[in-house]
Amino acid sequence: MGGQRDGDAAAFAGGRSRFLRPLLQPRACAGPLAGPDGAERLRAPPEAPVSCREPSREESRVRSDGAESARHPHPGDSGGNPPSGGGCGRQGRPRVACAGERRAARRRYPVGPSGYPARNAELPGGWDPHDRVQGRSGRSHRRARRAGRNAMTPAPAVRREGKRALVLVGGGITGAMYEFGCLRAFDDFFEGAFSSLDFDCYIGTSAGAVVGMLLANGVGPANVMDIIATSQKHPLNFRHEDIFRFDWENFRRSLGRSLAMLPAVYRYYRKHRTPFSLQSLMGLLQENLPSGLFSMKDYIRYLDSLIKQMDLATSFRGLKKELYVPAISLDLPMRTVFGDEGSRDIPISRAIAASSALPFYFEPVSIDGVDYVDGGTAQLAHVDIAINQGADRILVLNPIVPIQNDQSRVCIPSFSGGCVRIAEKGISYVWDQAARINSHEKLEMIVARLRVSHPWAKIVLVEPGGSDTVLFAQHILSYASRVQILDYGYRSTKSFLRERGEEMREIFLSPELHPTGGETLG
Image (cartoon, rainbow, N blue to C red; front, side):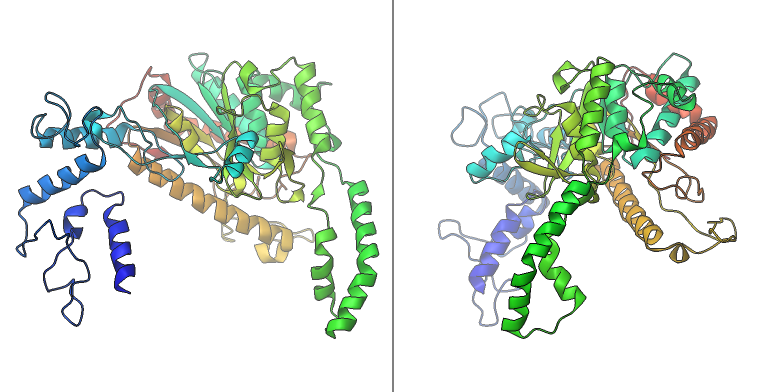
């Protein structure tokens, strides 16, 4: 038990907070750290005698900085003390100045998905911040597995200030239409001084990846809205069957495998004398069921055709602007960011399909032997990707919000007439509301954490009101409501800009932003 505590205390003392280390130095004195028999739980090294008196503030600071220097020696100095004239230490600059530089580095350094800064050996004072975690491409996943390492490993990042990023959340067909309407309203508001095509990088998840792909290729929202609203014969005016179609062939194969397995199931019941039930039978046959209701093959064919007919870039390297498409590896539950280094040669159509493979509805998409599902499975908006790429002004469009069904102000209509509770609308509405609550809560927590860790970044969140039933009443795969959702996205964003327009001008029209504090607007 004592050895376990020693290991836990040592691991904790070597953790991320250098300010706690003076309080966790091993002490050989009886007191709070002594066991019931008077033996020390934490024992100091014999060559380092320990005094039982409490250290002064100056001694604590010197001890903390000394431990920091020992762990991160200055380049070219084997003893851990920097050479004269550089770094921190007896022969270098005052320790108080170095501590200030470290705190400043924490404030201005990019963030990883964990919310901690990334590693950079060139930071002042030899400060070695914490690793960030970055996704890898499918090939990198396989190389990492062969090497026995986790596929998400620490990677360096360099902040490039002054970028403007657009983060596009998924939401199916209705989500994409909402985002096109929002962006058209922004373009009309700025009147050419700034447009949705002027962002430096685009981060799109699921349906938002399609929107981001078009914008990164120079296709504006006004063009898309006009084509869909006027029902022009154009690749952008997609048909319902272009997006998804029930995979009857896969269903027949699954049914055939299940029927072939019935004799083995019968022998299993006889051997184990297990009481028969439909639930237990489904448990035995479930591995023969399809991995999704719809296949993504038609969607990939449609995207390939759209890219070819509109003469768009087929890979991330050919894009006019930066595009990042996150997806989640199914077997190794990690995020892969397509468009990052190592995955820029992946076909954009397959990357978008991988990020759009909503579990249960769509089959996972395989890329280089790795199965991927919807990028929104882990988090709704991957804002940290924008920060890692050096963005300090970030616009987030999120169509997925839970409905606040206060029946004194909101009415969810039923087919028979009248207003009803969500539970009375059936299992699909209950599941949809639960998924929206979960996703939106995670989004708010992530944005709040980034506001604290990166106060220099301005994050503008635009989303529907919780009491508005327009998006909630339409299924995310609804094809018939496209024009209605386009108009709703445009009008709701115009209303937002009437209230917050001046703030938007100040944020997105300034060449570079260096505020003293961050703010989330929505």
